[in-house]
Image 1 (spheres, each protein chain N blue to C red):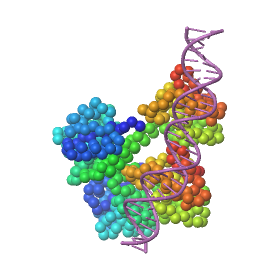
Image 2: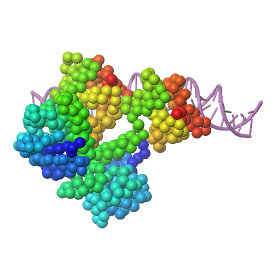
Image 3: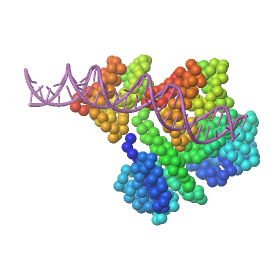
Image 4: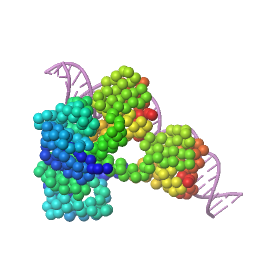
Length: 230
Length: 230
DNA sequence: GTTATTCGTTACAATGTTTTAACCTAAAAA
DNA sequence: TTTTTAGGTTAAAACATTGTAACGAATAAC
């Protein structure tokens, strides 16, 4: 997976540096903004995966920033973690009310920060992909159960590897739709995964073999890619 | 369904407020008590659907409160979620032994709290008033008693550690379902607990060893995680 | 304080999976 | 028909995942 970009909106330079240092050390890309206006501008120009937001800001305050982000459809799904000082309970509540996803009370240890950040991104990631996961796909005599990672042809269970399973689930999830080899790679291994497209052919070959006659549902579209027949 | 009434027993006002706010936002009715005695009085005067209980309380402590509630037939079916600080593992076990239904380690995010609470109420709701004990899982020759933290293979009792027990209960609670290592960590240690996923392998190894032949029910799903066979 | 327990980490070997590259065949284009 | 191109098939190499043991830190029990 590509490095995630984190936007820090914080006016105190020391904290900004501290946080930024730790994030970079943990493998994130970091952008900084010293106030709300600058933060918004950063959002406009870059793809941000998560915002770390100090509530006490000069100019536009944290709550306002939070509201603005969450009210902009384009950014509303970006998770926000508030960094809050003691005695800002009022603001914490207000922030959560305006759509912030979590808060970390100051002083916080870098470890806690990283842990929470990762947890949040993980949760976002899960629910994001879950949309494609129609729990159980039934098509022709095939049953594809994502929850148990199991495929059946009729009543016979077929043992598939992770990649084979993912490809089958992808194709069968949209019968009739043609996927290019690159699309399959992107979906199954993530963008920025570098392989020869031909690797997919080998996977499809194995898949067809294991599925037996049902393997014929996986059709080759010459010059384009593969699809599952409907 | 009518709004569910939640009783918060917690002496720290900040936390009380924060939790209460989030519960209200999620559509619950909330009552608060600053200590155990007050909590009992609330129970007497109102119909409570779930109790959120801080273990560190002035006066009557959390465990005692827990015991009292669970020993009163009238209240014994009310689920209790403990809010526990780090380093209270002893108390967690003790609490679970005295009938608490779940625990959430501090610091917790409001979202996690809500999620767990809803999950618990759903479980209680499913089994209904009819079946009091949804706490014991029986599968194959295994008996897993969450209430008293005990596992038996046939008639032989197996001594498991907290973590091993939780993992087993999680997997066996949904046979056939595949859990990723990360899901197991989130469920067992709380969502922002940072460990290598491989720590789960080691736990599973120990678990299989202790369970003997029954350990074979814990299946490895290569590339994904583990599951309990059904 | 000392000892025992639990849990996370790391290292290594064993095993399984995925990619590559090669060659072969079938379909389209010339 | 011949040439070109895309896809099928296979084996070997590269890579990833898992089981397992050993170590160490943190905590609880003595």
